[in-house]
Image (cartoon, rainbow, N blue to C red; front, side):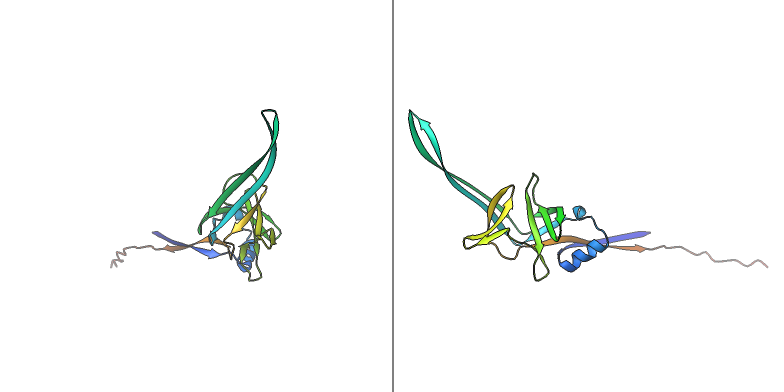
Length: 163
């Protein structure tokens, strides 16, 4: 009889854990990742365009806005690893990757590509988005422990002596 039990939980991806995974040559594409920490990516563009209307040139102002919210526990997959940066995919599509790098504390965090006095920014889908609610946004992985126990039950009849 074979008895299998398992339990799954999420663990922080640390430099130490990544080193163990690298040592065992684990394929990162087979790991279910999650973000820990809710954040939003916001794109705001305004631009002016010259349009001709009724024989007159007019300046037309356009505003473009997009928000994407990533709640804690959003499922993700590793797409590419370059050096110590893991490019994580939360949705399908070319260029829809977010970089997670090891922080000085040894945790893999979403770190901005650019920071200035107006905020923290990351490239996503070929455009620069502002990270709203930016704080420690770490990468977690699903860990599953499988316990195997082999159990065999037999009924012994005994031996009869003939004599």
